[in-house]
Image (cartoon, rainbow, N blue to C red; front, side, top):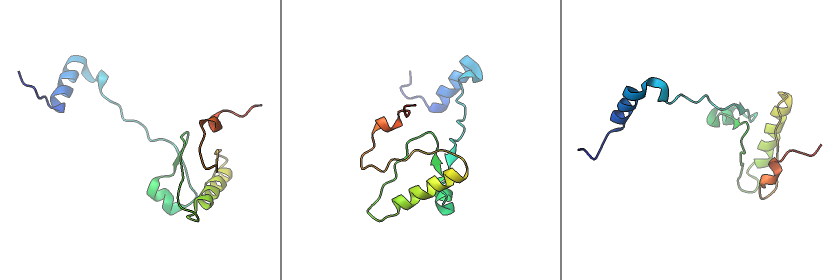
Length: 99
């Protein structure tokens, strides 16, 4: 009996037993929000929506300017964004605001 089995052999065995039902499906790309900076969007593809994104850098590196650009673009396109400029991020900031 062989101790090493290739990935292709395992996949072929699964398809042989169960057909295509267990084949992994491609995941659609996550929706993104533009940063408002074309060059940056081309490089990183925008900011993922529905996710926490941390923007960090040295003092005077442009973090605040980038955040203002993202908020301006979100406002112009009638999208929403939540922003925290605290030193430490807290999961409590993700709780819904009281009505």
